[in-house]
Every structure is written in C-alpha cells, then in structure tokens.
Amino acid sequence: MALLPIPYTTAFRDAVKLTASRGKTWKDRPRVNMGALTSMSVPQSYFSQFYSVGAICNAIVLCALASTVLHQGYSPAKLRVQAGSLVALLLLQLHLCRRLAECSLLMRFPITSRMHIIAYVFGLSYYMVLPISLLPPDGLRQLTQWAPTWRPTILINDCFAALDAVGPSLDALHGMAILVFLAGNLMQLQAHWQLARLSQPIVFPGSSDGRVPGAKGVAESQQQQQQQQQQQLSRFRGDKPRRVAGSSPDGPAALDMVLDPGPYRLPAGGLFEWISCPHYLAEMVIYTAFPMLLRAHNLLPWLILTWVVANLLLAAGPTHAWYKAHFKEYPSHRRAVLPMVF
Image (cartoon, rainbow, N blue to C red; front, side):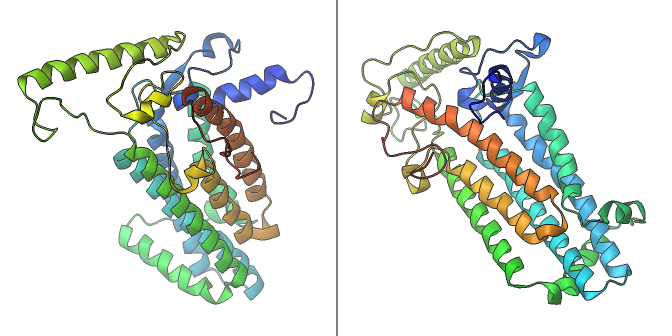
C-alpha cells in the first residue's frame, strides 16, 4: 500500500517511509505526528544487534530441525521438504554471521547516523521469527518435541549428519537457489566493502607520511575535527543544509557537491555505476533463494520476499534522491535499485 499512489493513504505512506529512513536519509525523513514516538531514534550501528540476535535464534532452530531429521523416519517426498528447510536455515546462518562481521568489523557508521525506534524494535522481532518462517509445515511441532543437548560438538555433528542425510533429496532447483544466494551475498559484500572504503582515516597535514602529525598538523586536524563535529551536530538538529564553496581536501570530486554531504562520499565502481543501492538489490536476490528452496510447501518465504522488496524500494528512493541532491554531477543514467528501471 505504501508503494501504490492510492488516495487517502498519504499518512500511512509517510509513516512507513519514516520507519524506513535511516543513515544519510534520516534528516530528510517525513514529518509524521506519531506522538512521543515521532523523534525517538537509536544509532544505526545497532544494526549489528539484529544479526547477533538473529544468528542465535536461527542456530537454535537449525539444530532442532537437524535433530528431528536424524531421529525421525521420513518418506523420500517428505525428506525433500525437510531438505529445503534445512538448507535454507543453514544459508541464513551464514548470511547472518557475515552481516554481523560486516557491521562489527567493516562498516563505519557516522555518529549522526540514526534509525527510528520502531524500525529498531521491528528489526529485532523480525530476525527472531524469521528462522521459524523457514521451517517445513510441521516445523513448530518438531520444535516442541525437541529435547536439546547443549554440547556444541553434538549440535554441530547433528547438523553435518542431517545435511548428509538429506543430500540425496536435493535437486537442480535446490542447487540453483544456493547459487542465487551465494551470488547475492557476494554482491552485497562487494557493495559494503566499497562503502566502507569511502570512510577514510584522518590524514594529518604537515607530516611526512600523512600519519604522524607535526605541531602544525595537530592544530589543523583539531580544527578540522571541530568543524566536522559542528556540521554533524547541525545536521542532527535538522538545520538547513548549506552549500559547499571553495576548495576541499578531498580533491576535485568534492567540488561537485551541491549540498554538504557531511561524512558521506559518492560511491563509484561495480554496480554503483548503474544503481545507487546495489546492497539493497543484493538483499532482494538473497531472499529470492528462500522461496526457491521451500517452493509451495511454505508460503511464508514468499510473503517475506514481498516485504523485503517493498521495504528496500521505500528506502532506496530517498537514498537515490539524497545522492542527486548532494552531488552536482551525479550520473544521470544511474537508477535507485533496479538498473534502467527504478
């Protein structure tokens, strides 16, 4: 509904866009009256909590399903259903661990990068229940009958033994889904790596190697840091962006800026040459693998894919508009998230 231009849904559309606003688009979020919740936000670095909570919950569900596959006799047809869910949970575990490592070790979130409190609460609850949605039709009953053992070696051995048991039930469509999942993860890893490289360490003026500061370099770097902190505080308060004038230590590319982009830079290379948010497109590709694995045996992955696509389209539009507003010579052929389409 938030994506469709339906009359009388403006308030609902703005509320959804408000919860989708984060990072560089937080300052330009829709002004929606939600009472005390309107301005409540948390640092965007809390994204790592989504993946830590999700990894724990998914590991529990994965071990439970692996145990039931090993200790219950299934017909070949039913074992194929179990195989799709088991592979989906295993791939999700890899994805969550990779994202947790990225948020903790690779990504550098500016201090002004925020997200709405509703998005934070929803994100936590979403990753808590996501593993359950990938279970086979009788998966919840299997969870209630699981008698867990908390010895890590036994749990890991059960997972590998269960994969070996369902291996003969995997077919070409399962293999294609795995390839789609891996391709999406590689796309997203490359995009996040490129974004992380835009966060450069402080270079001290007046030093021989740019790292060890001289007396003049210390004073100049402190002045630069104070100016950056004042600009970040101004943006956090919601002040009107100013125009950038004069030269910049970032080189000629900084002269293309129309509005002050703060700590953000213009990404380039790879899929960034075609779209503004290749990491969002990669997320859509990743979630496409789950319906391919579970097929018609479970409709929840199809609903989840629909939600992920809608949510990321809502987030990609403002991000694309932000880049166009803050960089004068932003490539005109570049789209938001779908090459040559949107």
